Amino acid sequence: MVCLCADWCTACRAYRAVFDHAAAEHPGVRFLWIDIEDSAAMLDQVEVENFPTILIGEGERPHFFGAITPQREVLLRLIAAHRPLDMGQDTGSPEVSSLLRRLQDIAA
Figure (cartoon, one colour):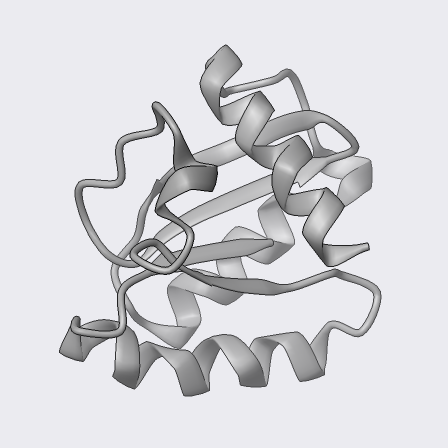
């Protein structure tokens, strides 16, 4: 579970507490907060147009990539819908798959 945000974004700064609280409630899920400005080189060709943008993946398979409304309930529903046992087909492009691999490398 990766949140792509920017420090200058007031919605992102407010959402950080929601994201961190969800991480504490789901210890079996790895959560990463990535500032897109600090990690611009890693994002390569992936376009982040709105905040917060969430990336969910398992292994090298992205299952969700998109902007969500910055609300706790939305994040919790997204987590529940994308538990490993419920995950379906890849939903990302090759660029998103590549980003997922790079993010897993820095989280290891």
